[in-house]
Length: 228
Image 1 (cartoon, rainbow, N blue to C red):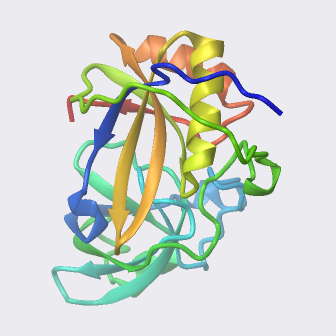
Image 2: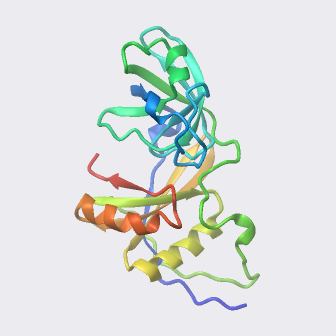
């Protein structure tokens, strides 16, 4: 089996050892009752009694200790959803988790997030399962890499641990959408994760328009504002 060389697939490699990989502080909120039974971005249904949460970037299955800075109460939640998308908020937790942290009546709380376990095996590796990736023993890739600082808006499609997934998907995206493909590297407790993004959108509306089509193959896709 012979594959064509990949030239300039990765127009930019956005490398980041993010502070969120270790400790993050900010405001937490919790799910409203109307979301009970609704599907989350991971495909699991939201249940108020379960210790789960939404985070913008952490891979699904990541276990996070959330500590209420007002009373030092803490709870461990599992990331299975994306959000919150309200400015200033860093995590959205289940109603049950909010009750354990004793901020149910207040609505929000200042919290500290700490990674307990980077993954339990349910990372958001949506469209190309590892078992389905065929790699020839003589397969060779040729591509240009440049460290960049993205601007405007982008679409994050998924987070992967296997580099071969990144190469295959990046090649397909470049051919199909004619947009710049970038990879953000996150290091969580010493484990590397690669998030694939389409970048170069000047307006949020343009990114959201394309994301509607991408959701069919990348159900966990979401828009990123690089100015924040």
